Image 1 (cartoon, chains in turn yellow, orange):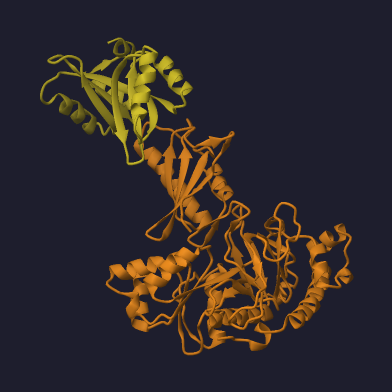
Image 2 (tube, rainbow over the protein chains, first blue to last red; image 1 turned 135 degrees about the vertical axis):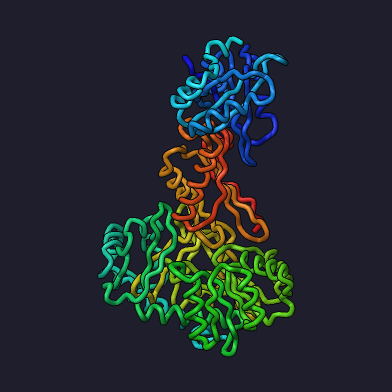
Length: 144
Length: 433
């Protein structure tokens, strides 16, 4: 699987909601690999990559959260100036639209991981691979 | 001023004699011309000839908003369309409005009653009436307009909205009487203040405010901020529109009902039993002169009581106290009738969302605000902010289109809307009326 599964959680903008999610995940022994939070004045969307998607999803749902699942792409890029720009140039040239993205670094000096959400995921994957970009498979990312 | 001395100060026996005669005529006519009434009377085992005293009115069946809905749009009309010269409508509970019609004589009656109402509130020939009730299907705008013309006053048909321009016109045209909803009156004062216009420098003597319930506290506030006499007017399109009853400038205590055209009753909303004078209950009206849309024992859902004491103004007409509430869940938001079930139908028609919602009504800067909280289920949820914001916009647009009222839509987490005994609390009204 070249796609990575990401779960997303709807959060109202009120105190303690994010902590409630992390409490549920921690009690279920679920490890968070990467996350990003998008927010507006009324609500937020928490996007998570975890080591056990199914369990995370069912635990959160059992606690009344609205949970969605989306396929995203994880890309490895060298942790140095210009790393991200290189990838974005490739996408821009091929006219591939990025819905959103976030990044994390595993260990300083090592490679960074970029998580992309595309409109057209298959097309994006094709372009990235054609340009020799290193794609991280789901299984590998969950187990990092 | 009393516009129609004869009818507004008639002795009780005389008014009751007129009422009985007109009631019998009305009952006879609806039995002959409206299948709905014929069926209802037959089911109750009543013939028009059984109405021999005003007390016999209590034997007639009630008419409800549901009955009007069942006969949408013209089923309750008692004359052929050839004789109908005007149609008005008010919002209904399922998206379909309640439709009412008027013959030329009905329009003349309504104009007369509105002329009486405006006069009771202090208007007369030579006055300039700034009429900020909405013109259109809503009865407010045209009701006041025709009454003002009948009275011989000058009317500025400004209608609702564009408040800054209204302030300019109030300043330049020198109106002496203001007609609008009480909340809009306060909003006008605020906008005027922002534009450096003080109501104290304007020429207003009286304001005739209705289409939504308001309290004595609000009267005090309006009178203080607008420097005029604030008068309450009552009416509903099912009965005729504004001009069913009016406070007098002299007492400002209770609204005189024009009993030569409408017979009021107060009933126990649970049992339908008629309550004695002075007791609080649901207000019920029977029209006794209307041609196109006569109505028998219409349940208004408004809660009030009747006061038969003599009034200092000289009118002998019974007074109803200010409406203090509703027996159903109807909300009046900026003069627009809104039933929670209407919002529910809008949500049902929006594919993405489930009809778990809560309405929060508040008053900010003297204008009613409506927030609709909608729970986000899995079908609506997206990991993209834009998609969720579009759903909010779509719901707000549909509410505006179907109900004619602006709402702020907020998505909330499932099960956040408080459910008491398994039933969601649909409405939170924070307005201090």
